[in-house]
Length: 553
Image (cartoon, rainbow, N blue to C red; front, side, top):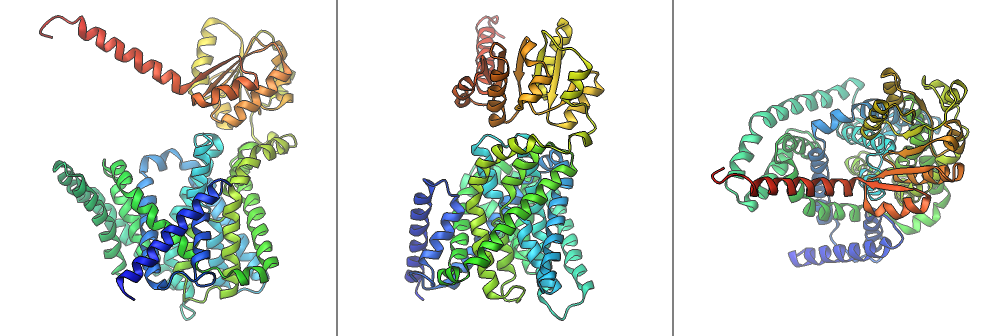
């Protein structure tokens, strides 16, 4: 095929992707699903507009490498340390339980061990791209369920690397169990070398490049590190994807991480789009209609099975029902890295072609369902929160205990014991104003109790909780929680329970002010506005000091 023919295929792919993503955007369908739909339409099983699938697969493999390079860039050590608990506990429980559950069920249905284990790998991972984009657009990344979801996603992304390494062993029917150790030991040795390079070589190299003040040279250098590391590592028998991931980790350890991310994103998104289009080309719509029932069965099993497992992980961490439900709703799909695993397993025979086709469709459907799951999550959480059987296991005082132990009147209710809650509690204590702290984060409640603060565990969106907190007799309610949806629901519930109560709400953005006012808030304070006012005061003070400084200073 001529170069002009390949260019024609690329133009067809990009045009179809643009059209599909633009059309599906109005239905709030993720871009990844749009890419897959585009590939299905132009692929060999539909219109057949793309002629050279091999060239597309080469570009797709490069897209996978850049995807993993981006993940490595974003996984800074400081971020990992901050999320260590949801990563280590939540991620390990979710991934481990999912793999074991899929393994057990697959064995019952007659699958051999290797195939069943690989299927567990595929289903265990969720969509980092879709979930983070959805949570970010809803302003929920820093909420308790947002942090738990992010921690689990980080663990899943890290697990993709050893999964990719183990796939060739699973596909080798003649290999023995001990041979699984070889790729793992190889990975350990490679990671060690890369970490040494990250500390000794790469920062100095990037420093020298940055001193030239040539942006194009810096961009070229970042891609040299990415593709060069990937090529070197793949040349010794380790996967290209692992090489790209480790290259990202190398650059993330330098002070040029953010610039590298901004320079990488445009090309990464384009080539990642080509990768997802190539996945869509694998779909045969004729087979989809013929296998409607098996596909629906796989889809429902994935959705409800992962929901139950992620909710279990949150419960093991003794997190509230609301956090568990919202996290489970956001992560109950199978994500883009499952396609990376399927691509790595091509030719190994781990999954028969018909089953893999059905599984691919079920995965796509689960991704399409994610925006709807995110929207329904709060309503489901509100319903389940009323029948929560785990409260007594959390080892903290509940609002019922508070209501029985004390008589509350003329007090301030502080909903949320973060930085704002702690400072407010301290100020009220100095003034001698009675107050009570309520939080859904058990660690915050225990921390407050250890400080001698009057605190309890409870969901302030519940009318029963507000009643036990004495909302009708309270002087004021201050809501300082990092969840805009929960804040609005709590405000509505409090206004119904105590029509004359003064309700002060803290939220992140000005765009939420009207929503909180409509919910019944008396005053709304936004972090965005407070930051702007602080900056204005600081700049005004600096200018005043400069203007009145003696000459010569």
